[in-house]
Length: 294
Length: 312
Image (cartoon, rainbow over all chains, first blue to last red; front, side, top):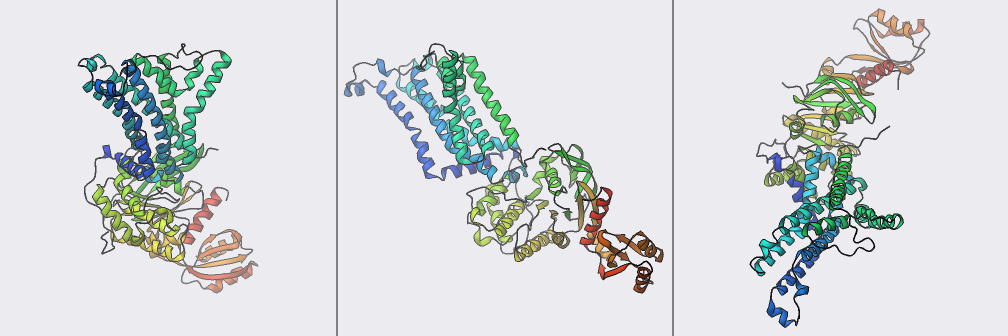
């Protein structure tokens, strides 16, 4: 197909490894996402709480700055499990906002433009398609969850007393594990709703709604049935249950029944169940050709 | 030479309905046309060959590769131009084709080079940096062709490639298809309901009706045979008329509404036909000398399978 000849020429050049070819989807999707200046700014904004937390760690470990700021007591500046729980929960919400922005862009537009046959007529299967798109969200969400979490841990370890890192070594796997659980929940819910709704704006609304509307419904159930199990519909709450249990810190006040907490195992089951349900929905919806029954 | 397509009792069921009902046969041509009325199963066959629909029973081989066992290997060798609009939103034409080529396995540099070449090849070189959303329908069809050939497949599957094109654009598409067919080893499968498109580009034809093979013919051989025949439009023609013609040594095919196709031996004169018609009180309203065309093959296949299955 030389341009000057305008004649067809077969391709006999090198071929990339099949195993990592799904990352082509990731690369192009990331490039498309970050071509929007607004998204780049938003991504930076989601990291502001991390900068504030870093400043907090710096101040809490620097007596001279504390004196300059006339801070009398150090008790409010403890960098402990509670501190990391707050930071991670804050970043979990930031991750949700990012997902609502980026997630529907990945799949909904492909489905509404009918481009799945183009992908799947190539040596790429549906699992690789999902992996390629999910890797975008995993990458972005990692940047606002476990990576800053570990950086804050490293900062505190370097600035704190000698034994701090060793005494709190369990924070590292907790930060990673809980972050990845939340990333999986956000990613799969976002991809599944995008695949079902197909319309980007509606997919954004539905994704966000799944995190903010069921908690209200759950609290209504709690109020009527005098129970606390309605909170299993509150996904951020379930994340908090797991995180605070693993970091061994108290939960925030959640109104009535605060002391009666959903068990950690139940939180795990619900969040993993949500992931599996999302995968099932994706499997049902992501087809090269839709088949109408009847 | 490996058969382009081998169908082995291929059954496909979708949504509880049988769409492809026991297709069998082998097609060896470089350019194969899939013909059939709407709902005949052309697109389903293509989708099945691409692995989008699993066969309920039987199988098929494309370029010697089984569609079940070698699906991935097969898709690496295929370029697909879908019928409907299929694009990635917000991309320029060039980026779209490059992206598709990279997914097919080309490294980024080569994909970029091939995307440029493909765009110039299909005649969209000047608009390759424009967003796909701004392309006209004809340009979109050509862009779909560009993405299908950019990675240099061994087989190109085109589903209704001239859909929605105006006559010059259609001619350009047909010309491109013929160029690709003649200038490379690439095999082509072209699904269309436009007989002219298939006749101008294909060597072999698979005609489908109600998910079954209605006819499978080699157009080249048909063209070589190139028999002359009479096309009659009559009022009152019946079995007795065709029997009488057959006794004269003619071959007859009777269609609906009194239409007939009569292949006459050289020694028989047309006046014999008039004589028999007069004897049987049959009016001959029109008589044309014609040669076999794809249209005849197609209509014949439709009539025959229509009769076999109780008509449309």
